[in-house]
Amino acid sequence: MADKRMTADDVAAEVRDGMTIGIGGWGSRRKPMALVRALLRTPVKDLTVVSYGGPDVGLLYAAGKVRRVVFGFVTLDSIPFDPWFGRARETGAIEVTEYDEGMFAAALSAAAQRLPFLPLRAGLGSEVMRVNPGLRTVRSPYAGGEELVAVPAQELDVALVHLNRADARGNAQYLGPDPYFDDVFCLAAKKRFVSVEKVVETAELTGPVQSLLLNRGCVDGVVEAPRGAHFTTAVPDYGRDERFQKHYVACAKDLDAWPGFVDRFLSGDERQYLSEVDRFEAAA
Amino acid sequence: MSATRAEIAVVAVAELFRGDGEIVASPMGYIPSLGAKLARLTFEPDLLLSDGEAYLIDVEGTVEGWQPFRKMLDTIVPHGRRHVVMGANQIDKFGNQNISAIGDHARPAKQLLGVRGAPGNTANHRTSYWVPRHSPRVFVESVDIVSGVGYDNAAKAGLKYHDVHRVVTNLGVFDFATPDHSMRAVSLHPGVTPEEVAAASGFDIDLSSAGVSREPTDEELRLIRDLDPKGLRDKEVPS
Image (cartoon, rainbow over all chains, first blue to last red; front, side, top):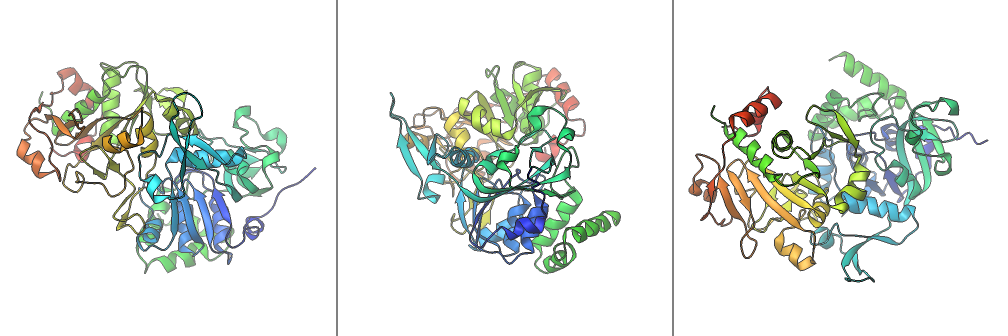
């Protein structure tokens, strides 16, 4: 019986220069931040990041890891804009593929279903079609002959997601209200890694069976990472750390303050990160 | 009782949903959410209210349905029984809306959210907009990046379910019911002059047939004040 437990650094070591990585969650919600932080500690570069973007995108850009972002939005939810993503765009430092949220989902679903594309109305008439010049349309072969967007499959080399619980074999469970698209990210990827708040025995994956979002057939590695979504949400284990998120944004806006943030929170391992977060919270 | 400008705006947003029946109302922003709740408490009791997260809720917050983001995108939006009220960083006379970025897309002067769901919303179901500060920076001759699709682009693309309904601002209510689907004032809020709207808009709006936005009834005012006891509506739209 496969025991797929590994460390966040093991996962990060699987990511190579130029890969396309999908990051689960939505905005500043249930992001696999411990895995992202592990990536920040590697020399990897030129990544294409596919994300319903939150602070994952800004942090990876700030660390010089990103060549392209495939996105429908980048937001921190309670704070609308991520300063690092804004800087990346406004200096022309990265390439982008901008999609409507539904097109993004369709691109992942097409890859998950091994289809070259899925037809969609979203995008027609909008400038998504202009700013993504590679996009094509397709005409319905049935009555009416409607013209639709052929959203191309977005295949991923690696998917990184964060859930609440998993067993050592990779069966994983979300306990919050929203699955986001985490299983679709995994199905669209060649290698699939899930971090969780807690690794438990299979029999302890209790709760509605519908909450078992990932089965072990679509998971290659399991990382136990308590508070591994910090500072984003991982309800019901914890909500967003709004105070820390504000601190991130304040430092990200100020290029003189940023190195101090990196030194304090990102230069060490995950244990140091969490202990600095504790110290930050205690100083409130 | 006399209504504040914010309360006039809440009623104007509620009126967006009149006749919608049992469909999903997705209000983005504070005054739109107050408006949707007011509509449900009064003349549209069958409205389904999205909380912007994974739930359909009633006005008291009781969960009556599950609508996670994937369901929104896979079925609710394309199925079409939805009326969204989105924001707009820019909007033009044909109802094209921009929330993506200001300036050239390749290297924007200001990166905003991204197009989010605007292309899909405007291709699939009724969409209205809420602009709390009507100004020439928002009401522009042409938007920098078409996120939500306006009437001219919808016609070119042959969008058969395109339905941009109205724009509500702190100054008035606007629709596109002109022969060429350019923006027209339906009503100006009490105390707002046509000159004020013209000065706050970067393109010509047909103001010829504008009425006056209706005042809330005493019952509506009571409901609004119950829904928003802290008066957050007045922060979004000062009187």
